[in-house]
Amino acid sequence: MRTILVATAIVCAIGLGSCSDERGPTEPTPRQVGVVVAKPEPLVQGGAITGDVRARVQTDLSFRVSGKIIERLVEVGQSVKAGQLLARIDPEEQKADLDVAAANLQSAEAQQTQAQLAYDRQQSLFRTQVTTRAALDQAQEALLTAQASTKSAQALFRNRPGYPVLYGAEGGCRRGDHRAQRRGRAGGAGRPGRLHPCP
Image (cartoon, rainbow, N blue to C red; front, top):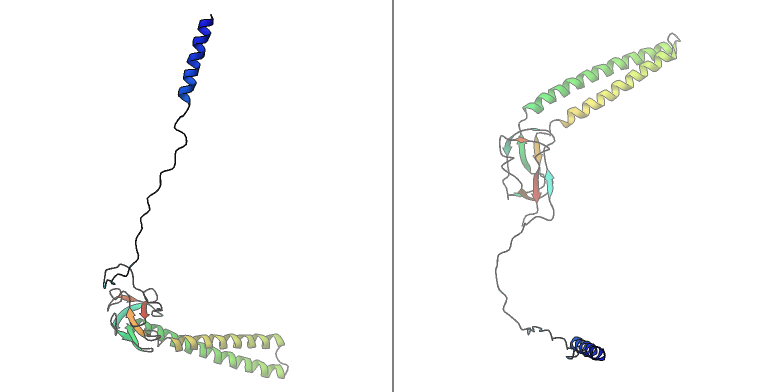
């Protein structure tokens, strides 16, 4: 029995001895660092890069009314001055609208004349106490309505003639999709051209 205990103690001692690390602590491996000496080099001229070149300032222009472009007076890249005529659309539709506006103006003026006469008559009758105050007020309201209609018709008539042409708002170079704005294509507020500062 004593022999078995001694043998067991020897085996345990051998096992514990094999688990211990006799090498001790290891030092970390040093890292390699690349070093480059700064020195002047000749500048390489030229080279190729990719990107979009855009103007810092641009102005979008378009017609106030839609129609078919019959004349374009500037090309892409051409210099444009402020107030220069750029394009013109077919004026036939605008002429028809102008005739309608003129007819509406004449009708409004005639209604205003009738309303003025009716108001003057009511005023004269009211002075002689033949008509009522309500009738005079009604005639005055009709006159004010007719005057407002006349002013509106005059504004529409005055603004119509200049719409079929497009002028440059400021100086620059014509840019944009000229294929979409060539002669015979539809033009209007939906197809603006752009002016950029000339290089």
